[in-house]
Image 1 (cartoon, rainbow, N blue to C red):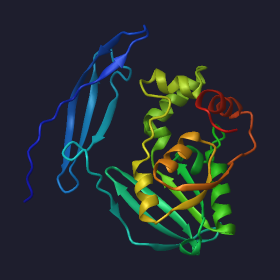
Image 2 (image 1 turned 90 degrees about the horizontal axis):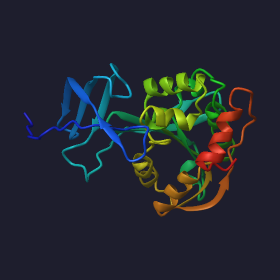
Image 3 (image 1 turned 60 degrees about the horizontal axis):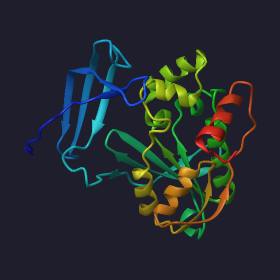
Length: 261
């Protein structure tokens, strides 16, 4: 049996409403799971007291504590995936608790400069067709493009800009009260965008990409791809028609998050 020893520390700090002040809160340990093969720990805690932003809510915190300098990703084999958009090849990547998907056109390996979209998971948009965002239409646009011209869609499974589905719905509830998408995340104790693109970098390297046509409106994704040493020959905008439910959402993405809309 493989054994490793380690020490666990749980610490949390929530910024208060006044500048320069912060308040701590206590977390009750509910469950602890250790995956020694992948050097990962899953800690499930419950907030205690009234100082926490999520009082009484259960939260999961996943982190690799044993080898923070080493990224361990498990890869699947490549499989055929026929869809209503066309026939694709798919490959999955498991990075700790998150599993990502590379969706490739059949001629992907033959393309010198493939179309690429890094699509962030949005269950409410991608699966249910929510009108509160532009995610579903952006995904469809990308799949139709690679079906027609060839390329790759990386389905990056960091729901709600990596705050998780429960917190995303809590953010939706705050938006119902009048907060915008950035304000809601911050109200819940998160950054406006918590996404981490390390797994995306691994996928881009694994698939041997040197130069691409990047389909995005997000300048952070442009910067990340360039930081991987990949040449972006062209940026293809991912523009969809707005509706009354997402007009303010798109406005905030442009004005506060710098999206190229």
